[in-house]
Amino acid sequence: MPTDQPQAEKRPAGQAPVEETPLEAVGEREEPTPTSVKAAKATARQQPDAKRAANATKASELVPGALRNVGVYLPPALLAQVKDAVYQERTTYAELLVDAFEAVDDKQIAKEFTSETTLTRSGMPRRAPRKRGEAGIQIQLRLDGLQVAWLDEKVTEFDAPSRSALVSAVFKLHIQAVQTPRE
Image 1 (cartoon, rainbow, N blue to C red):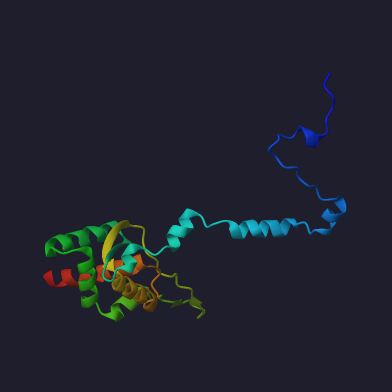
Image 2: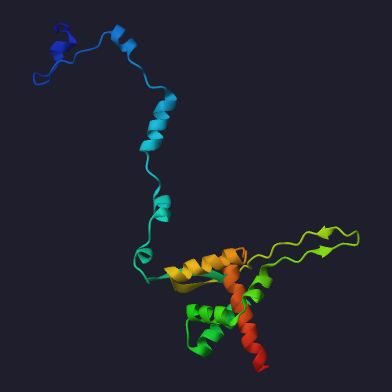
């Protein structure tokens, strides 16, 4: 018949006995509160991969003069005209954009983004809707870092709603200017 042996005697020979703290000593230690445990876990957790990738510096930004793809959306009719101009001039979207900014006056571009308020019969001005970019098809402009920074400054300068809206307006004005003398 087996006899009940104390726990200490049932341990394997290689394992040392564990000393237990008396209950009075346990009461003196501070137990972590649930909020401090959550805070510790939150700081220990790393950012998700998507956020880390968004904050990471791209290789094209580290190399001076390196080109990168900048997506902009153009309305389908304008895109067809831009593609035709690229084909006719044997150039790229980016070079056509540089040419367009050279050919179009800043006042013309600014006019594209100024909202026009109209007065009602009573004299109270009617709120003008802010011009927005149109739904369109994405193209990729191959621009270097300086060009992207310059383009973003122009978006701010003209108070354009987006980079796509500015590029679309400049392409439209340039193509109109090029087509008008031919006709």
